[in-house]
Length: 423
Picture 1: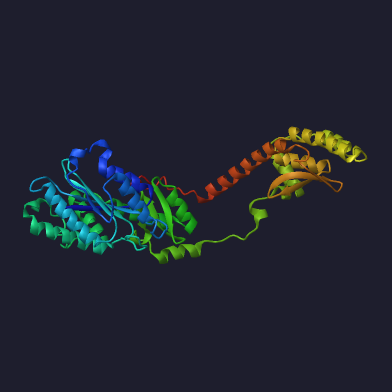
Picture 2 (picture 1 turned 135 degrees about the horizontal axis):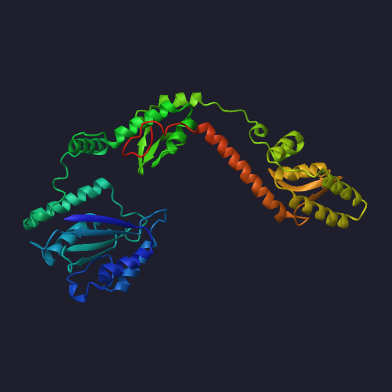
C-alpha cells in the first residue's frame, strides 16, 4: 500500500477537495459509492461535510502557512486479492492509527480507475481545538509500517502492495548518496572523460589563479555562459552551473584562498569628484569644458553669447514677471542651440548665469541673486532631453572604463568541451 499525504493551506481547498473526492470531476458516479467513512461529522451530504470542516477550522490557531486540511491517499497496485470490504477495513484501521479518534475525517474510495485508491480528508486541527493534527516524519514513517504490518497479517494475498516493510535496509543518504551516484556515473562511462564537477573544479581554480581581487574573480566567473556566483549569508559561497549550486570548498577553493583575494583588493579613497566629475565641477573648470568641446569639434559662437549676455542685463530693470518671460526666451534658445550638456553649461557661464545642480541634475539657474527653476520657467521638458543624453554618455564612459579594467584575455586559452566556458 502506497500512502501519500498533501497539506492544504487555504480554506477554499475544503470545498474544492470535498467536491473532488465525491465526484472526481464527473468521472465518479453514485454507482461507485461502495462506502463513505466519516469521523466526528454529522450528516452524509456534501453540504454537511463542508459545514463541519469549516466550523471546526474556526477553532484552528491561525499561523503563517498553517495547514487547513490534510489530503491523504491510500493506493494499491492492482485489484488482485482486493475488494471493497478489504479497502474499507484497511481504511478504518488507518484512520484509527492516524487520528486516534481526534479530528474530522472523510474517506471516499475511487474504484473506477485501474489502480484502486481511497482519498482521505483529515482536518488540520483536532475537534473544536487549537491543537494540530500534524505528524512528524518519524511518526508518519512508523504509521506506514504499522498499517502495512496489519495488511500483511490480515490480507496476505496483497503481498504485491508491500512497500514499507523493507525500508530499513541500509541506503546511502545525503553526501553518501551523492557520492554513490557519482561513482555509478564514473562506472557507466568507464571514465573516458572527466565528469562535469571535476572539470568545473579545474576551471574555477584556473579562474582563481587569473584573479587579482575578489571582484575580478566574480567578474571572470560571470563572463562565462551558464555560470554565475552566489552568496550565502552575505559571503561569497560558490557558483551556479546549469541551475545547480557548487560550493567553492568542494571545487578546491578554500576559505583561506578567498581571504587572500580579499586582502589583495585595494579599496580606492572616496573621492567622487575624481572618479565621476559632477556637472558643477565641469562648470567651475573652464579648461575641461574647452577640452571637451574641442575634442567633439563643437564651435562656440562667442558673438552670439555676448548678445545674449547683454540682453539678460537689459531685462534686469523690468518687472519680475517680465524678467521671467524674457529670461525663458533666452534660456530656451541656449538649450536649443547647445549640442550637449557641457556646452550648455559653458553657455551659461558666458552669459553670467549660474547653474543650480541637485543630485547631479541641472534644476535651474541663478542670476543676480534670483533663483529660477526650469519647472517655473516651463522648460523642464527641454532640459530633460539634454540631461538624458548626458547621463547616457557618462554611463557608457564608465562602462567602457570598467570593461577595460576587468577584461581578461581568456578567449585565447583552453576551451573545455561540454562546460561552455573558456580557460
